Amino acid sequence: MVKDLSTKYSGIVELLAYLVKERVYGPVDRLARATDLETIYMALYEALRYASTEVRKGFNKIPSDEEIKQFLDEVNRRGASLARRIAIEALTTGLSQESQEKEKEKEGSSPREKTESSDQTKR
Image 1 (cartoon, helix red, strand yellow):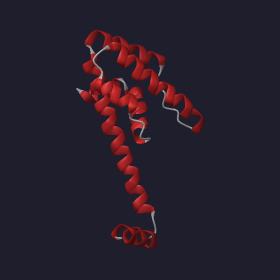
Image 2: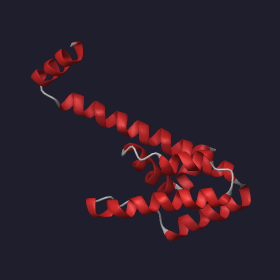
Image 3: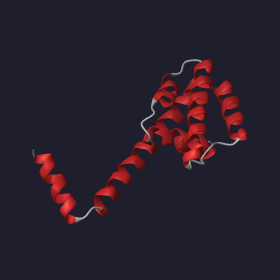
Image 4: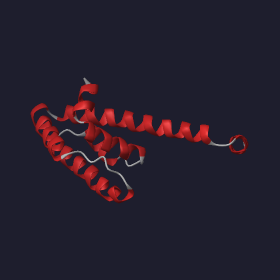
């Protein structure tokens, strides 16, 4: 079911996953702990507000107005558990993306850089 939600609300999941990757956990944490609609609305507002500052840096994965409206309507019908599921999916996605980027960085470094990095770790 979580995968269904991540497809249905892919823009929201991508936005929140980006925040996780950037280590901006506040909105995701608020969604995960939300017990009422007001908390969900504010968490989503904070996520969108943060994203608005990232647009200048090239971030372009802002959810559509329609997706936001559908999400809020569904949360209103189904309750806060929906927001928690989205938060879990976003956290998993963001952490996975961060891990993959770190692996690519390791693979891309020269043998000397790998040795120097290893030497620093041993100290």
